[in-house]
Length: 262
Image 1 (cartoon, rainbow, N blue to C red):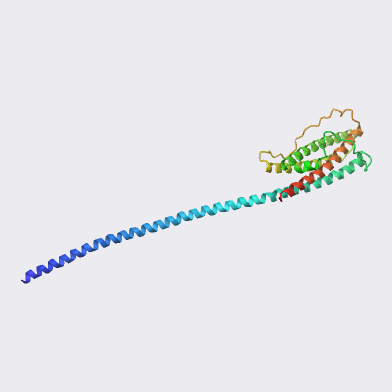
Image 2: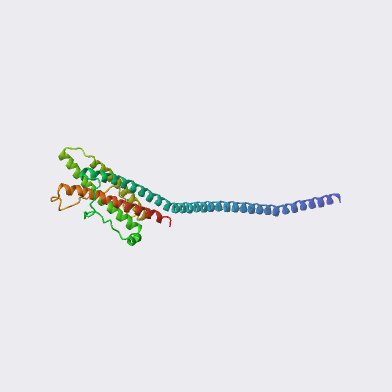
């Protein structure tokens, strides 16, 4: 009897151990599932944060770029206005040198510092008379293009006159400072033309920026019939009209600068 009871107890204990093992297996499976779920959620969150940070950086970069472009656009009128003001100041200072040279020229080459002859004109020089309303309606491009061409003409006329004076000095064996003074004015005109060309390239990108004037000989069929006096008066007319033209050009730059405020 005792042996039989011991056997039954061993069987019951064995059954209990097997049942406990069967209970642990689902627990392990559930734990593994939970672990995988946690890892998946963690990876998803990390990936989402990484993608979100990338998008944030891109948006910040795009916003910064837009701000920079807006700043450049807002500064462009200011830069243009400063350029026009600089051109105005150079025009005014050049006009002052032209007036001083004109006074000396009349005194030394015409014998009278008060000499005036408004009736004589040179057909090769730009017209000074302008209709006020047409002048106001000119576009910035038209205004600058006309100024560039007129400055080119005056530069060529001064160049021709300077060479004539140099030839006279060689024949008369005298030292005259007027050719050098004219050359200084030509340098001022060249700087003005360079500034105007830069302003034109800002308006029209296809415009090829020019830094030096194009030397074009002025043809005059009546040169051989002119007297020495005619040649001297011609120099007076060039300087006289250049003085008046620079006054007009200064007004152009003031108008262009004022339009950048609009």
